[in-house]
Length: 599
Image 1 (cartoon, rainbow, N blue to C red):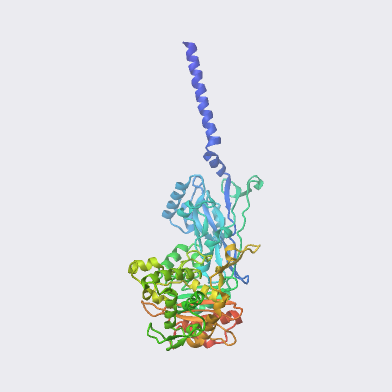
Image 2: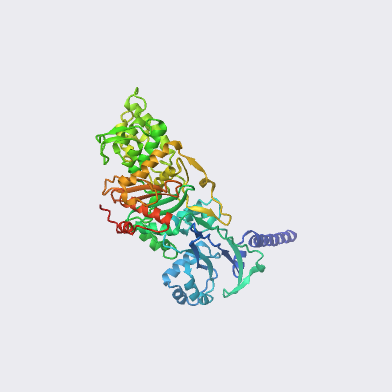
């Protein structure tokens, strides 16, 4: 019996010993929270955030830089305050806010650091830095926010912001952590992978008062951050500022592109906002103010606004008709103004005269020939068949689909198809007369402003374009993404462009005489986009010079009436400024800046 009892006691002791050994093994090897708690008493793991890539204009002028800021981190287990009120006064917060932030930090982790106060400015940090050492458990972490050298390009550059839970859950790279910043809109978003760089980690030793005592283990476990790649934009900042000035106080857009490369020279959305408003601690307040603005300054009009193109679309109609062989360049077609409202006088029209005088009736007849190709068939059959073929040709001009611009949220516009008219009128119950308004760029046809400029690019290049892009090169090597080096054909033979271009050259004398520049041949086309809600919109697209074009442009000014007024005059000034570097017609500049576009 005694022998059995001895074995039982030994077994119990052995069991207890095993339990303690297992627990000790668990604490020291398996469960790292005790190790982390012990190490956090003397070692701080500090994220070394990289400098985000800088952004320059095409002439190497700095547009976006990095301003230093600090996040104040807290480790709840270590946070011991002898004077909470003094700490609150230091950060200019009240006791209730302090309590709420500490609760949030504890919910996140009792032993891991989290952000207590975000984006302390460099100046403010300098004022409180020496006092922070008296508050154990709190330490600063250096970061940067964006700074801007110009109050321009907000809709191009975009802004950065703290990653949210939805974005974090979609991060398949596992690069981002809670509290990280990333590009939200604009180029900051499109080129995030190049701009962000790669963060590093530094391990620092601190004493019981939180004072930095140097690197841990001579920095052998540290990893250096790698700065982001710099971007060089195709934008000319001085031309951009001038264009923004001309559009100030108006609603609309200006987009200019270099035809030979697809590089965007100016990109104006009006009204806009100062990019600095969405950087720093006042981001939330300013963002709320901008979203409530009835003029929608955050709305990127060159990419997102969709309008009927109006008469600028006649250039495309002429090219398709010539390519399809339903007209010839010199063929005379009599127009008496009875088919559709028209400013052009009655008479005989060919392609050149039809473009020059912008004859609605001429293009009504031309479009009919494109649609109704087989007289042996019913008009209700010819309509859908002709529209399907015509639409496929229009799509090759980059219409009805995104062009692939290197900015987010580009809309496709609308090139109506058979399905749309079947829904409106019923299958087999519509014909040419139901879609004839598209002959002059009205009706259901919609384009965004950058597509309008790209149409001018195609005219300048006599049949091809490169995808419009705002980044000229990336990083020290100066590479460009391959999709912006692809030459894209619109499917029209170059031989068909000269009569259209000649018509565009001579159109300025008839519809936009103010836009004429001495010694610079501008090939342009005005448009007046109908607006059922008020004054019509003013539209103009052009390229210059006629031979060896250097710039293609479109201007869209809402509620400004005829295209030959606001839009053409604005475009003419920008063309002159870009090609000559100066304005020789101050009277025209005053006319545009005043914004009264009467006769």
